[in-house]
Length: 108
Image (tube, rainbow, N blue to C red; front, side, top):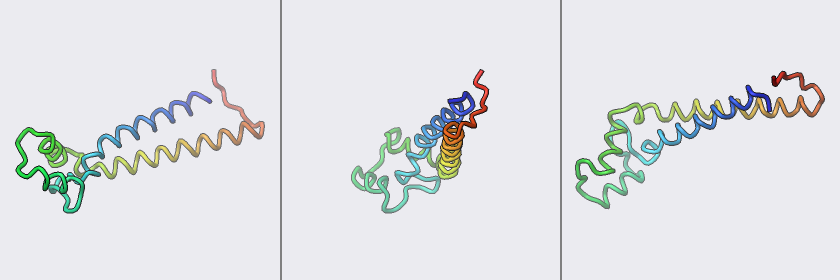
């Protein structure tokens, strides 16, 4: 594959991994507005009762409430998904051009 395509695929993969990690608290139900009713976080909170300061649960809620994770995670995930889709489209286009004998990429 050409370098530009490898770089694009690598960037999309790294962005996907970062968005996945950043979205975990949001997807579990931790948001800037608190724990979402009916979410996995709400189920866990009801099972543990009083949340101890400094616990992993308190840390997850703090991250979601005080950082961009609670508000930007969906946007980050959407943008990353668009990047991955764009990378796949480039790959398919390049593959088709190569198959048709129209490969004029300069890999040097």
